[in-house]
Length: 336
Image 1 (cartoon, rainbow, N blue to C red):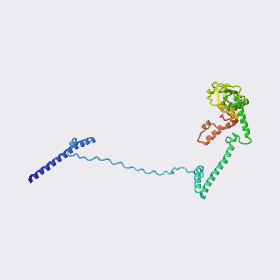
Image 2 (image 1 turned 30 degrees about the vertical axis):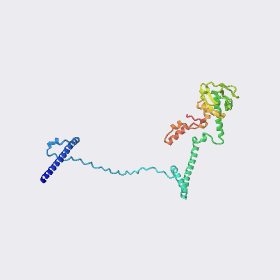
Image 3 (image 1 turned 45 degrees about the vertical axis):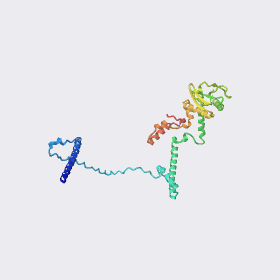
């Protein structure tokens, strides 16, 4: 029994080895397509296509060229020019004072030591001295340049100012009398309006003094105690888009209407509004317009400043002087 048992054991071992060999063979064969496929994908010829090489199929790998040597850039030698640095602020200049005085004041308040307070006060002294020197030079420059002296535009001295005001008032009188020759006044009122009666009185006084032709128009068709002659509103108020009474309108034939007041207004205010409306719409002669615009004497226009813009101070100072030349004669502010 023992020899037979040993024989069976040997046969079992051989069968097991055969099975294992068969499995290993199958695994090897299964892996071959992927290897071949990988060779095809890589672009290299298959071994079966290289049979002419025989046993001498080995080839040395191609030598890859060495990488190019690194080129070191040597630092440039200095050319002797110093590095550009931000301009430093000069001590005690206006820029320096503007920047440092708040800091010095803060330090003096936070820590009021002798050194901190003294530093701020001396910086303040420098600023005040600079201001004094600027004011002195300003006085000299203004005294030598009539275009910079405001007294030549509008007199401020006690002796000369009354002459200036009388001249201005004469211009107002001339302007109102001229407007009365080219236009008239419409006054819209309502019989229930509390402010209409005093406003009618104001307009009547103004018309009598300067010669305005007046027309009183009733919104509700009823009269006022101080208005004996009037017309009923027939659509004029709607055309002018009026909302309240009393309303005063400057009428210049044939079809010019200028609302000068809505509500009650004093006589001098009403006269000023009439002049503004007339001047804005070029109803005044040039000489009268110059008299009423006394405060515009020697004033540069926006067009002047736009045309004279330049980065060169000498250039634009000369340009402005040339523009102001002749602007003071008769109070004219028009360019020649």
